[in-house]
Image (cartoon, rainbow, N blue to C red):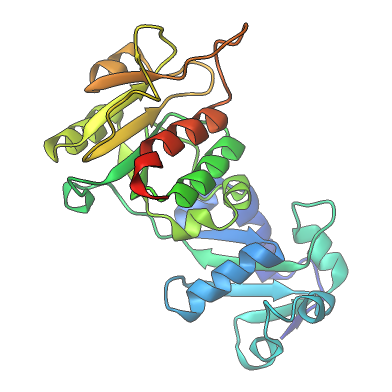
Amino acid sequence: MHISSRDNPKIKQYIKLASSKKYRRETGMFVLEGARLCKDAFDMWQHGKLVISACFATQKAIEKYSGYIEQKWFSQLDMFYTVDEDVAMKMSDSEFPQGVFIIARKEDKCLSEDEIKPDGKYLVLDDLQDPGNVGTILRTAEAVGVDAVIMCNNCCELYNPKVIRSAMGSALRLSVMLGGDFKGTALILKNKGIKVFASVIDKDAVSVTEADYSGGCAVVLGNEGNGMSAEDVAQCTGRLTIRMKGNMNSLNVATAASIILWEMRRGDNL
């Protein structure tokens, strides 16, 4: 099916999903844009791991990304639509759109004790707000092989388009759980015998290079501007910090996450 009007209801739905967190929550849907990201979504869809409700692509994109997109989908399946170039420009969040877009169903997964392995490695995001940071952290977490990322205390929405884009598919493949408030999250982890380390800026905390990550453990990263609250730090079983030289006393949270995650998994034959 071909769509030539920017006022088409399907196009309006895509644009609203891309711009409105409330609408994503109400509909249980989210959007993806870009050839590589959509390829990952297509792979998951073909293996029954993602429900796609609509896909849009320009004819130019179908030809250019033939290794990612199959022409027959757009002639045989009702949920696949070709769109004009000006329609793609209207839909895109990019100055130079690649012309491939997807609407898919969200798969929210709430934290539960049954999902936590006593010997697992976990990353907890406590009130992180920047979608670029969250997406980058998810990408790193997948690269080092954590068992899951837990998002709590009103973290940035997992299905924010900027999170999805900066995560480069990791948000779809990685196990991500929603943990509600931090106190409850920490309690679930500790009940399973997981050591919970608060990452802090404190010279008296254990260095990330010396912390004991053996067995089950979780590291918590706090808000970009304020870090973890004193109340949340008190819920943890230990504290760790990144020792820095020069006049530096803090790092971007995504950079800090990369260092901490590498140290946590360094002894596990990455």
